[in-house]
Amino acid sequence: MEYRESIIQTFIKILETAEAFRHGHENLFGELSLTEIHCIDWIGQIDHANVTKVADAIEMTRGGVSKIVKRLQNKGYIESYREPDNKKEIYFRLTEEGRRMYIKHRRRHDEDKREKERLLDAYSTEEQKVIFRFLKEIQQQFDAAVHAED
Picture (tube, rainbow, N blue to C red):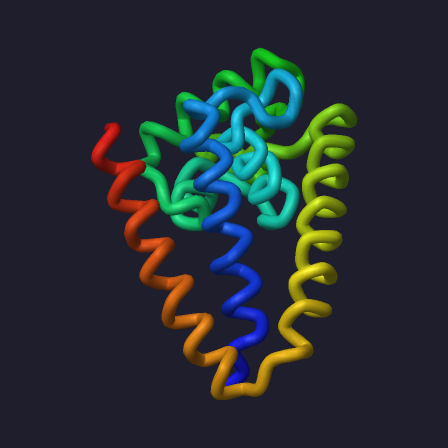
């Protein structure tokens, strides 16, 4: 099994969670919280993004995503729309400002990924397996701490 990608993704999630936790969930991208940035990121990635699709991707409740979406609309990062053949479903897309923030976030992730890949090149697959197990345990501790605050 290839552990390199899993290690990198887990490590990035730990760093983001730790940063948000350490700073008391303050805004890390100007006026946007980390959760808002991730919502923008998923809306930028998902075709015909709606509350349900974003909630599934970001692992939040639909109600929580609805609140974030409303804030992002008010801040001018996303807009809602409906398809002509489906007047019931509400979809979201990034505004020009939302697209800029999406690209900024993607670049940051890409830089982080390249940095971690260079670091992991020095470790064998077996060593990466141990590192991955260790990071998953740390991630579980952070997740438990974050949920304890809710």
